[in-house]
Length: 317
Picture (cartoon, rainbow, N blue to C red):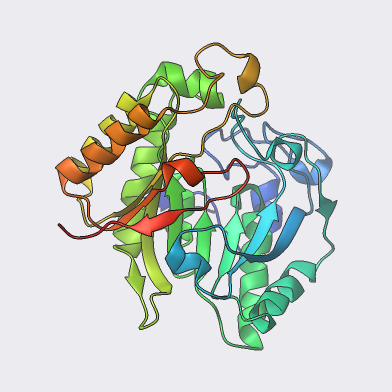
């Protein structure tokens, strides 16, 4: 049965009851209702066991997440979007990876903790939340908990995010489009901008600004990534303007330059080239003009297509 939330809304998911959730899956905004326990597959293609492509210490996130020992990252297979430029399409869209038996995810979290990682970083977690919540609780019962990073495209349901209160410490989210036409063509969902903006509001209300320890390692808060897209720098600027007016410039923003025409983008007009220095500079200038001074920009000349490199803190002026 749905449960009443503290803010008066209703949550129609209980992330600790996997069987009830997966009988009619509504974990993402598509709310496809697939009975995953009976073999039905919704848009994302996720089944009845968590599928993982890769896991281990990762040094390509923003500095407060990667730190010196790496972010303890689990890259889940499947995705609720279908981005035509996705660099991870072999596992996000084609589903490469391995189905994990019960208990393996919790043991992986323990391994990442023993490896000295700064956090537990769940990448594209949405289709697998019941298992993730269960594994996190199990790993915390026999050792210290690490900050939990929810690494998402921003395509999330507010009800699901509210159900994660007390589980997630750091939200690492995206805000990619401001126009429905770009969202529909680029990621297969025209309502992405409204959905991701509302999700960001909920994340901010729940986690607040980025917080770090004495060593500069994230302990909680919200980071929003803005990937600058070819011919669409104005949409990134529009999102920065929306954030400044709605959430506020305390939000840590990460302005990213590493778009490359991967997957189907190379053959798609207006998506088939990298971002130019002028486009990226326009977005960085907007961030400065609007007063964002908590976050990162990239060294444009050093960007690479396969990992995030070249981040630096914005310096106070």
